Image (cartoon, rainbow, N blue to C red; front, side):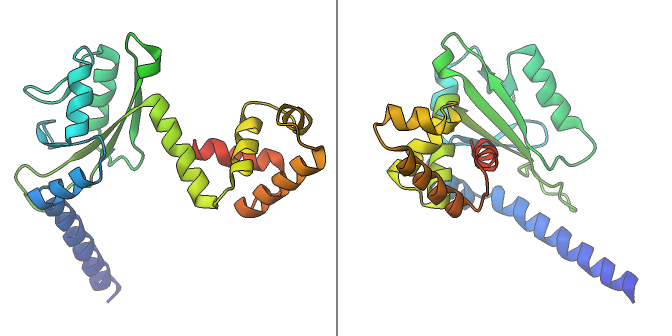
Length: 213
């Protein structure tokens, strides 16, 4: 009986994964991806391009020394290419994405690439999506993560200013002097942030911020 239940669960899991593949491989899904305004690519198991958003196309065209799209998606830096190849040929399914910081001539335009491996389908699905890639300019990516942190905990402008000052290494006294407020006001802002984020100490708050950003 237990064995049959286990088989049913596996079949259900296989069906869900197959549905995921079919969904990622349809024009409707690609239209949805485009509406998200993200810099994304979908590749099949041979790194052939299934879908690329206009935003990702723009980034790749601006940096022809970093990427190649033909015949399949490639990174032109040998070390990065080897890491992407190793990520794709691994026998085990990767639950964590591969993250690479792609350098170019201008430090302000460094590009963060993250590659997510989708589950392997139980049945044969031609040209199924196997990898989801995301591209972000590094500085802009940091800004997006800060916005996510701010929205998650509904921080006020003063609380945001305090958090960024703490990340930059300022003490509460230095923060108070820089923004011409009393130390008591700074402590009150910190207490508010700790309450919203569910942290108890300044060190715990910093650790949480680093996890987000």
